[in-house]
Image (tube, rainbow over all chains, first blue to last red; front, side):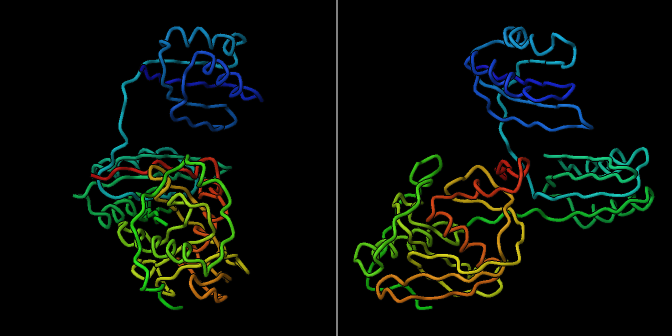
Length: 171
Length: 176
């Protein structure tokens, strides 16, 4: 089994996902995990596929998508990975007036304590900047200390920040 | 609410996982006084008791396509009011209000969690196994969420059918 990381980026229009997944299905590839969104109106999709086709074959087969230059496609082989987390999950939320360095400054504090980001979305809407990140904090990290460090840098940036435990309940 | 009958000894049954088709079929309406339903009620409670963190279990989750479930949220930290351990047959939602969103997991979908809106004020009507007596339960907060999750199971629905958005489904992480 070969795992491939495939990205499709570019000008959005109806039918991109249908065409992409049609080609992948014809090649016998199974879509393991995928995510797609619009980033500032640009189509952005990432997939991990499993199957026997190699990266070159898949990239060539997806050639029709890139023919008019509106989309770019990349395919590369990746090893199998396991979803393993250490510690506790938190949701980091930041919002405020747009200015350079919000993401890098805030996220640097997370990295300093060994926090691992497992999901991240940022949106710029007019002057408003919003960041949401899911963070795994290692057992050694002190969430209260991180929250106060985040509060300090947020104050410098003029943005609001919160860090709260992300719980899921088994029913 | 009375505790389920102690005369019948519950058996611990294996919990089935999606995509088992029994989980996606509406369960049959049952006769709550039938001996096999009283036995099923005891089995559900016994299986719930041995499953760590389990606060509810519905018949389709043990492979039986029937409208029977048990709930017990009394030990859960998010619980406000609760009715202890109970089993309901043929339960239906009478009224539901004040939706709240929270992340749910399910023993039958062990590798995923999802953000689901559920009413936090709920009135449910059903029948007790054994006597067949009709009961009306007013539940709030976490117990209300658990009841809706189990009634969904009895209707052939999983939390996956109620996730609030395409990015509201999450891989459950294995914490070391």
